[in-house]
Picture 1 (cartoon, rainbow, N blue to C red):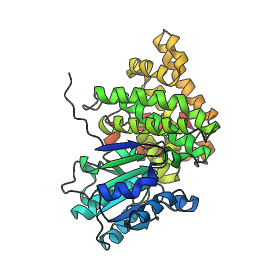
Picture 2: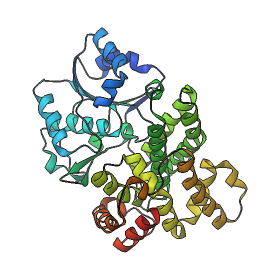
Picture 3: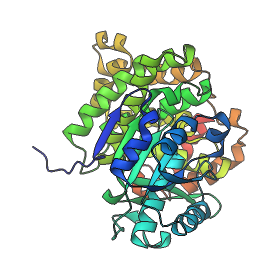
Picture 4: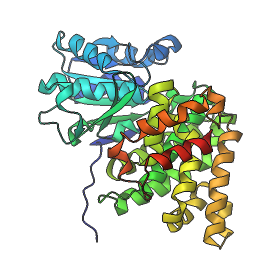
Length: 386
């Protein structure tokens, strides 16, 4: 048995409509005064209203911070922390996609411990304790509700991570009702994002790649692959939505312990420079990174393929199975209605060298890739995606 560590969120509650009980859960887990971090889109859609009503009914005092944007810059984190510090809060709720949950983690940590953002970038740089934290995902994609990771945009476009067990929440609430109103393109892109988490966790060369993560990755892909087309075509299907949300969480648990690699490393500059949503950024480069990696992880891709596409179980030649896996993965994005080339995202070919250079800064991720990625390899992958 290999030596490894597996950490995850203390408690996970999976129940459609559970946010209608958020107030009682906050009373039990946090206290009487909370800081809720979300984004303006959820406010406008009214998705957050049942949760706020529940807090009011339970007598919980709350402040809503709704200035989170995609790929949140450091100044948003600092602003949220400043507002939270002035309120003498008991704890924090993250409500939304990965950006809101990532900011919520850092608010809980920095307000609780007094640490500064510049001092905690990197792996295991956190020294203090955070405030109590509940995470409520509204997309089936990031898995941030079960990861010890927060990704922030620094400067113009560089992505930096804070990675430490202290960021793992106390409670994750998986309420599929919150995902019913998601537009099809967000449902599709976040779903592919979750699939990337499972694939990269399974093939990660991290010394902490472990049997638990691999099992979780397989089950995540079964749930995600079996339901992603359904939720795009039949968005009110609550069972399929629940399966997607659970699949996303399982994939999050997998990569939280067996870290992701080159797909994410090459996706980050697309988000940082061009503000392409993270899930779509991953989808754009996924099949091309898989094709690059295939010589080094043929067996692993062959093992994963039938979880996503069950018909591939009958393909006995491993190379043929993996080739079809990559082709079907690329076709899946097209069938889901996602853009599939960098050209479609109005990225000029002359920018590809800059993207490759920026991707090289993601050393924390590239070290986990099953095949070494240098700047020329990154450029070749971007060209294939162009």
